[in-house]
Length: 546
Ligand code: NOJ
Image (tube, rainbow, N blue to C red; front, top):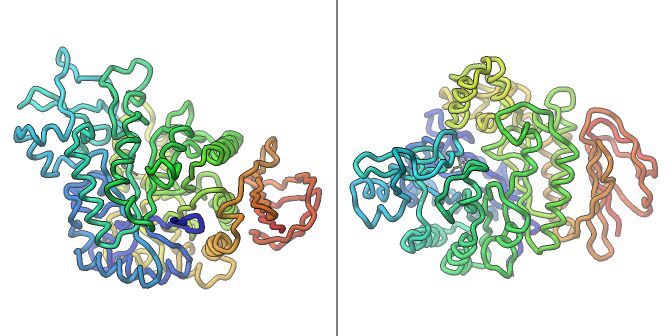
């Protein structure tokens, strides 16, 4: 029986983590070099975003060969050394499997374009109508989702960039190839898989969408469950200690329960993004809006309870390579940098589910606040700069939006110390370093007992120590509070009480049942539990009783 409920996973974006071969780009040896740092933090597994051969149009999410390492990241020997060294420290590796699409540089796609019918059927090539694409679906990176190929007078589907062609999972040969890839890496000692946008791999019907951008025809379709069961049965399901997580785009609780319920033999857990859309104006990402705290709370409560009742399991996260930095987003990266970063960490890590930490989050790394398009690297951000410009927005309005929403906020190089390029590289990095590395960096954090880093380390340690954090049932508290997110976790005679003030204002809360609790963790000098409890700006406390 596998147990992952006491584990915490750390996400590495290798390109921005640590450069050891002096080219301004992070590499696998750079990860190996930092294993002791990660061990000190206490994480159990490293999710590495894709480092396979790729033209890097979407920073590796456009895979051209699933078996080979892109030379910019190193060699197979480097990878094997990383696996070995990580294992020595009891740290597992989770690979990122981008199975919805391949790069158009993949040999399957090249053969398809050369007219080979076997490989054409790996993708969706379809006729248009009246010189229009087959459907009106929009690509998630902007524009229509179909690209015209003159030689065939047909279009191919790309839900993402034009160089990311969607795979046809209806074709059993595609499923076989994917199983083969998973088994290859399992044999090499990989014990985790993250499946990229896995809930869009099945396209139910090719129809125009007059209500939306096409999502309802390809999101969470029933066959996704069949495909996942098949992968599970023929690859990772055969090994007891693997951990799998699916990234789910625009999904529902009901579907995530289905994907992650152990008896369904699909995945161990799911990522969803609803809680990271509470600062979208009219559901549109490329807008500016203060986050809606009540909606955030409601979403957490609904997902916590819904997944619990259904027997599913959540992946818990604030940050990843696709999201702005949380301390700049729902915290306060100026006056209350330390307090708010710690509060956000506590609020998340004590919930029911498996926490993920994204590189630099444990230091309180902030948004980049870039002011020039030249500083941006992300294809989605650059596309949207032009889309917003065409809509008539002024440059300063566009930059304000990018500064708050761009994925590049997460991708600036890891801040290791206060030396040249934050100690990330001795060469100009592929993307600019955030100038605040002078005071926000790992070396400084390690020397400060009260740092955000040690707060994260403590949260991880508490999870290992207290079964109630791993297994306890979730119960919302103070649901009407407009400022405080609080909840209980209960397991037999143990109770955990978690209280988080999400604002820079003090607030007094009323608690009925306070007997017998001891304080486990806070981001302020401790205060004992009272019926009328005044919380300081961004204060969070965790109390425990048995
Ligand atoms: C989700 C990944 O996290 C993102 O970075 C990527 O652009 C898309 N999937 C497409 O693969």
